Length: 393
Ligand SMILES: Cc1cc2nc3c(=O)[nH]c(=O)nc-3n(C[C@H](O)[C@H](O)[C@H](O)COP(=O)(O)OP(=O)(O)OC[C@H]3O[C@@H](n4cnc5c(N)ncnc54)[C@H](O)[C@@H]3O)c2cc1C
Image (tube, rainbow, N blue to C red):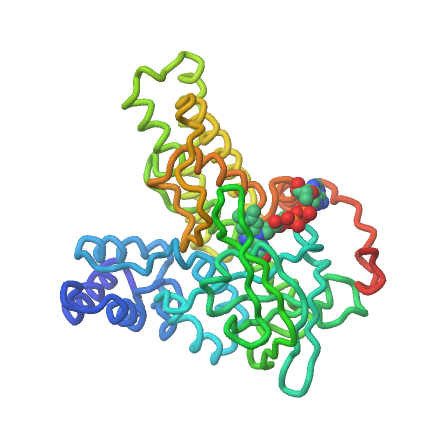
């Protein structure tokens, strides 16, 4: 039984064998993975020890106290939060062995090739085609809004393998090598001036059948694991009190008394409480996850995250007055991660606009909560039994 004491012992053993002060960063991370201390709830041999997920905090605290490097989770969020749980659930033994270690250490960055120009909220309508040719699948199509595609070595990809059946049935899930011939990545500039995301054109890209994840035609079910994990990854991050967007505005309030008004005070207090409630609810959601895979409840967290970020960053701009309209940098940068710390209020205000779109729009998440959490009647769907090729596009 791997309990907290056993994890502490193993962590100290790792630190003694690989002292952080004298061990290279990557060597340390690889050794940590091999010791089963990467994500303790994963199976043995795959970076874990089959331990309760809640005990990860024990390992993290010991390593932090010893000054050990981490795997920069924010830089590799799509890999950790979305690709890994899907590969763990549906991957073959070879796929798990090949992909999970470099994914966790951050040696290989992942991106998500799901959305298309004609398929966002209605993702199951996607038109990128994968056609079987011998041992390969030949993929043609266009993806859009692909965060980090310019940094990624691998992508989780869904494509249509059977146009003759209804849209949800003819989709298959693949692991796509972003360095393969036929993969072209072009930057898309956002409202912030930065280009975090991209268009990705796939032209006769050959993906070996060994890199199919799950059964042919079962891609929609496999993708649900990714999407449910995505909402938790976006909305359910572990944060200290005042760790989110509320932090900078509370700091300004304390340090700049000349900016305060009674009206803004009331609104700040309300948002501070909402942010704290949301932070604690995310903690509870993570505890529920200890018991299994995330369900539709993550949609609620993601909804709250988007609304709060937009309201809080709006309040901050208002509080700062003219100064709040300043924006630090309009050069087109290609950031390695989305991080609002150290950025000005204008950046936070603009970037949070995307929070109610990425990972499912707030309108669509409300539908999911209504149908799958509250059990309300479903929206009418007229295309459920129509072959994809006959749908109006
Ligand atoms: C910052 C950012 C990063 C992203 N990163 C990625 C990524 O890495 N990989 C990836 O695959 N995608 C990514 N996306 C894409 C994202 O998932 C889609 O933008 C999103 O799913 C919405 O799809 P759409 O843009 O096609 O809008 P549409 O689906 O066309 O929606 C347009 C409007 O119609 C509303 N609407 C649509 N259907 C309904 C309905 N049934 N009921 C009520 N209202 C509805 C929507 O809420 C929205 O307001 C990213 C998006 C953003 C903003």
